[in-house]
Length: 136
Length: 182
Image 1 (cartoon, rainbow over the protein chains, first blue to last red):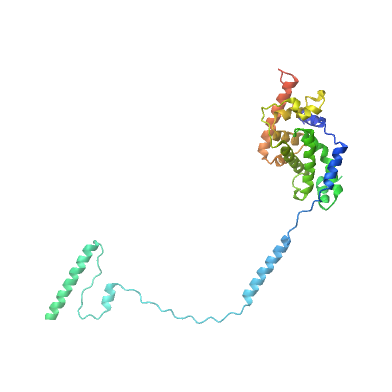
Image 2: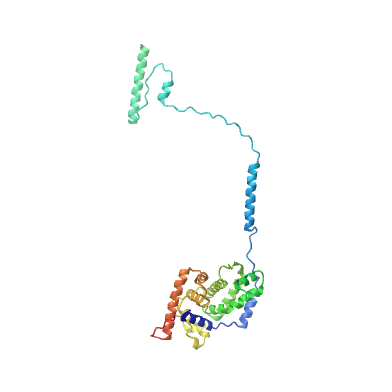
């Protein structure tokens, strides 16, 4: 402790802080009028109790799940599988054509207008062939 | 001799003499401290009474990981601040010495009291930090706790306050000649 710290302590002791009998009586009286302090309230269920209650609950849940009678499961029904969608050429190949028309998958590289024009031209060509066949 | 914490436990179990023992232990120390923080002696005595009442009422909220004195001084500081109406003195403000309660009740031979100078030169918070550290010998951690500040803030405040007070006391002791304590 250096000189300054000693001076601070010394000067603090010099402060006129005597407790007069009146002050002491006043302090005693004010405390006597006060209700005694109570210890902090403990929780209704202590922590250990919470743990035990939790474990019991978990065990009960497991037992219930294990012991519950299980209804027999129905045998699995065959699932009706919808026929896979086929592309137009595949579908055309399966048909029994009287007129074997060459069906090609459209080449979708051109713009849509061009594709439509091509389709119309193909259709017209097919119509003519049918008309020729009928005339023959 | 029982420790403060043992007395607190006994008081919480309903022992009135245990709390009376705590009051005996701290009443003079606290009054001394409050005299440096309040405007008048009457205010300091009121703050002392409020401090013990609050401590008794809320004793159950005391946590033993801190010293009992730290907790008690924290309550005392609040009560003193309430008495002062939250007034804090700026560092440079030197109020009229005749209005100083310490000056009024101290003899002329004691006019160079460091705490009287501290009351004029330092903020109440800085003054409290010095008191708790050097009069109550509380470690920095406890001082910081009592002030509700960080340890870093407390260290810096202590260093600055100490330097300022030393310089002022040295100037008062020998005007024109600098004397450093420590």
